Image (cartoon, rainbow over all chains, first blue to last red; front, side):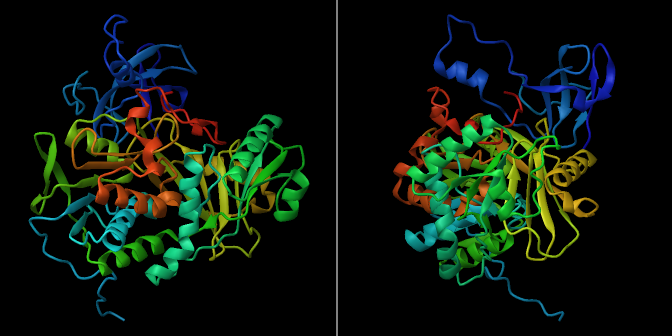
Length: 90
Length: 407
């Protein structure tokens, strides 16, 4: 199904203008306490939530902003109330 | 005409409270594993749990293409065995899987692609898989409908021809394997949803379902595109997977014109003519993860444009049906088959992306051996989940179609 995404700069736009930037995984692990496992977790691992998740997007064919939204992966609809989140917060 | 037939896999049974092994997911991988567990390893006390009906997911949504022209030395032998097993299974199951080894023609549209194909062909030949590199003229001889003029978006430079590949009827594979598994004693429970995997002291103890609790020591999750979400929700194990909807469609039936599976990485398009005469064609994946399995006009337009460029005689044909399924992609385009690592007695078989169909026969055989003997067969060793933290990703991304979900 088609997707619209609300860019914080440009407003609601066609989803194909954007590049998906991955699930929100919290801050990048610090260099000092990093081990292969935590780095792998940050780089590769996903929750693959079937429901509302927080995720990154890049407005590739627009203003170039990086931002997060909440989206329901089973309907492709944006969720404006972030309390309705199914993935456990990072 | 209106009498009710008993399904091939037996009447609906009461769910027992205990099994030797439980398989979550009644798709081809789950059914094939159940079949080999019961047939080869004498584990007959097993249950396959399927939330909807068997073959509801990727098993019935793929474009039925089988091939063994992958890139790495780890993947090719597995797919080769899967390919070799179709005629064997047809006999063993006494069920016509309609294997048509018409051959795959993978079009190359640049010198760089030809170079990549040369590597692929070398790997295939080294591992005993028939695969040839041919030029555009030879490709045209194989597929007279092919456009090899250079006035299209991606002119054809040549092709990788893989004669042993082809088409298997995917529904027949589902029904045949279900029939075979049931005949050897496995139970197939449709409309039975697994809700949780119970554990105690790092060992699997059972499965909660919507029809009651099951006690078991061994659980396999092989639920196709839903595996990653289930494994995270039930066992807290995160996987390097992105789940994307992938779309496919068929045109109205026409006279025979396509004797091979034709695919193109540059056009993101693969097409074959079914025995009914329809051109079945598939598209690229949605550019963002989702579980919708909904279809979009974007890909109908894309397929129409691509097909009418390299197979121009198809211009003007109408698409009749259009559907979507899920592809669970890993960063290295290779699957994850693992077990007894994070939790004793827990096995997983996922990350198959859009290659789950062509691999199911061999995977069932080896996952069954893994589960029965509690020892990972050599052929499955490279597919461990740990390869990601060891930075030993496989080179399958160098195969001919690439994807970008979040990498």
